[in-house]
Image (tube, rainbow, N blue to C red; front, side):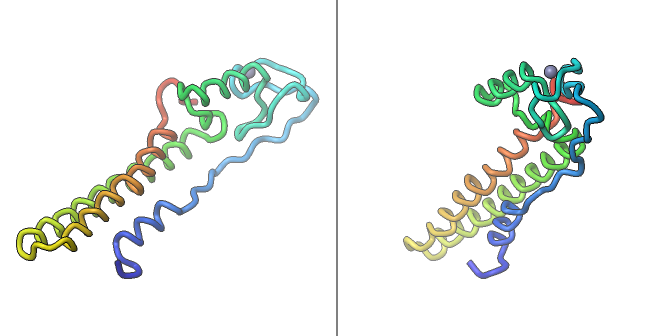
Length: 153
Ligand SMILES: [Zn+2]
């Protein structure tokens, strides 16, 4: 595949880094409000997460949720707009990968019909790689960052 081709551009999109817009606020005193449950706790009893301080109980729960896949931990680290933006980028990446994959598959099919040879399977193989590797990454990003009613803030 030539440099700057659709597959290369997709790979560059997949590797692009998205930066959040918000940083955690600086606390005024020794006690801070948990960004998750709102309880006021001693700052030494908290973890620092993307949106501010989080009490130990909420951090433990978030870690368990992350491990079990119940709910990604990003809700406390990124504001809803950022999550929506990242999810949208993931969705776009997945759809682009599907489109490029379909095009490659069509090319392979045409080759197979008009010039049957083992080489005709190469575009099809590339299509599978594009769809599952790059498209899969986009899909995973969308799933992780999408803002669901349960974690919207
Ligand atoms: Zn809490």
